[in-house]
Image (tube, rainbow over all chains, first blue to last red; front, top):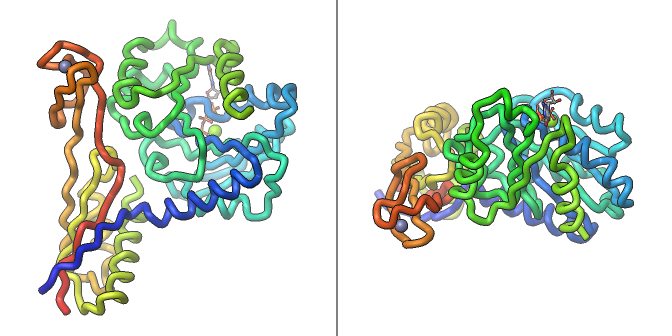
Length: 216
Length: 114
Ligand SMILES: Nc1nc2c(ncn2[C@@H]2O[C@H](COP(=O)(O)OP(=O)(O)OP(=O)(O)O)[C@@H](O)[C@H]2O)c(=O)[nH]1
Ligand SMILES: [Mg+2]
Ligand SMILES: [Zn+2]
């Protein structure tokens, strides 16, 4: 019997494809965002809030929607006039770089300013897969409990931005915002934190302005 | 966690190694899972056990080492292994504590029969 040293990461292949995506995005001049959260935190709602601001600022927005089944989220955005493609993973719990490349195979990215990829609602699996994005956002909501960053540290560890959504529900849920943000910072001291409500509009301007400035 | 796709990737890497080194059979696979990888060892062993049938790794033992999570106190640098949850630094009392660990899953080595 003999031993062979391998030292290969199982995510290597995805990483190579992600770098290819990243080169394509950079050539097209598109700023690419990967949005991760548990199901129903408000990812699509946040994009719906962003869309009119992109129009007002003359920025072209393109969205990739990742869901296990249905075109529902892409349809919601199309109704607002947003260009959107839907990836249905049919069971897979995350998007990977290959799925993003396939979804964009026929798309014309030249002229797209902002490409948002809404990942499958899941706080674990998507965190392992680089899609070629420049910015990674983790969205949480006040209905989920303030201990999520402690339970799912990887999602926060690898994100650049954390949006706490559904601030309008604070009065009805046991959620300590300070405790949540301290836990998020524990996973990642560099996290840029935002608090929003897609229902009342609270915090939406601050978040969207910040994103638009990153893009500029 | 997507243990099945990780198991498939492991098999693909083993097959590439077989083409390169020309061994007959894999006896065991040493795998290192980072503290932040989210890998569930039992689920990965199960998935690997299902898909390894009929390959050169059919009888292979999967040895998974999961790295423990590390907590580092930002102000004083004190570090400790594991101990989840909120809490203060036992040395300086600060609550400014950072979670540290890798998210990677790495095949370290293979034991093979030529
Ligand atoms: N009260 C309140 N409800 C919200 C807020 N944001 C979103 N919702 C509601 O929460 C539900 C889920 O919102 P979505 O935007 O579909 O969430 P998502 O993260 O895209 O969900 P998936 O794609 O299924 O993972 C919908 O009923 C929204 O109307 C908010 O700020 N406050
Ligand atoms: Mg959605
Ligand atoms: Zn300390």
